[in-house]
Image (cartoon, rainbow, N blue to C red; front, side):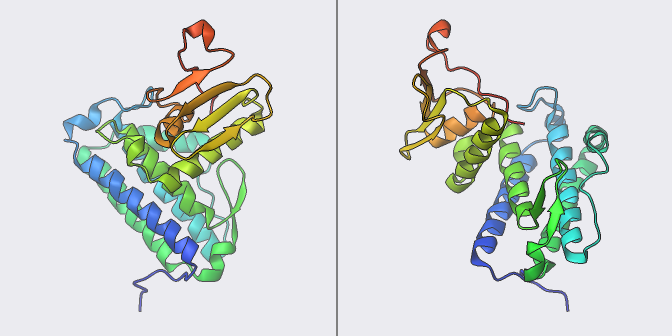
Length: 252
């Protein structure tokens, strides 16, 4: 008989799966609020329409499902054959009819959820490889999807904001972003203060730092390159812009 519940019993993993599923439901709600004609409108990402966002989220679910299948079977199943193939899938998906595009999102989300549900507990620790070449346990696929659905629900530009994203997701996003900056060395002299959590991150050893401050949602929005509202900045680099918050370093 086919399982009707997750095979894993790990409470942390179950909580993470719930967060991913809630993000998928949130994306679905914002997508379903759009008319077919509105799918042609611009998203918050330069060069991408809402069609591109939807196609990306659909194909992302399929790609992550391939990693889960890899963990289950031991047979290497890459996310994509190449980044060029990934980009082509998105561009082609954006040309689908509205009903086909919506079906792509719905069906791929169900497929991924079933793959997660049926993955045995021990298989979650099997190693798979992301398109960036990182070798990670299958548990990482849950965060990979969580990040995509919550952020891109905002990118649909249909009323969602970073304030709608749960705090634990925002916190991990900020950690990921600052980690990427640190790896590239682009965080030098930059300190981030999260005012509603009394949290300070970044180059805290800098003698003369540019300090960006604001509530968690606003700080993550800025760090992800999605806007500068709700935050302030002081220190080097802000005087020349009359106090305007500088652009965040590149994330991805």
